[in-house]
Length: 110
Image (cartoon, rainbow, N blue to C red; front, side, top):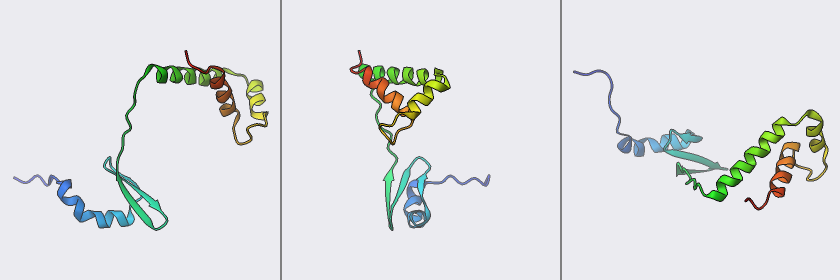
């Protein structure tokens, strides 16, 4: 008895669909492929999930970063304006300036 649902074999179907997909796609296709465009050149790549090592140093830096963000969120507007008005580096927002100074002051992590 047919239910109307046909199981798809994407392994066999994909080579037939690739010329159509590659011509019009941008971004990612499900969790399989990423399509990158460089001018008129389209590059296809498999999805990549980076390895996340949970070393003691990395966890320490994550904690310092979390403490810095929570400190910034607890500041009043006068303190935030002080960091926003600093001139150097010119391209940074006050939040980024504060985190840079906070992380540099706590280097090396203990």
